[in-house]
Length: 74
Image (cartoon, rainbow, N blue to C red; front, side, top):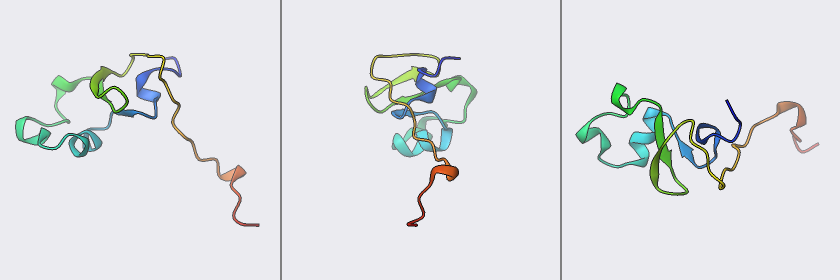
């Protein structure tokens, strides 16, 4: 798995609950939890469905939280 895959991108919406929130009315037609969705998600950058393993030049890594490097106002 490459770190530049869509599933690891800031612009991707891969979780079923988040997909249902991002696409109003989706659950009327079906459910984002369905097996037919497979490993697809929504790219908010390009406004289209993508495979989790897809890649593109606009990849932006998701921010991560590191408690060890967190400044608590000290």
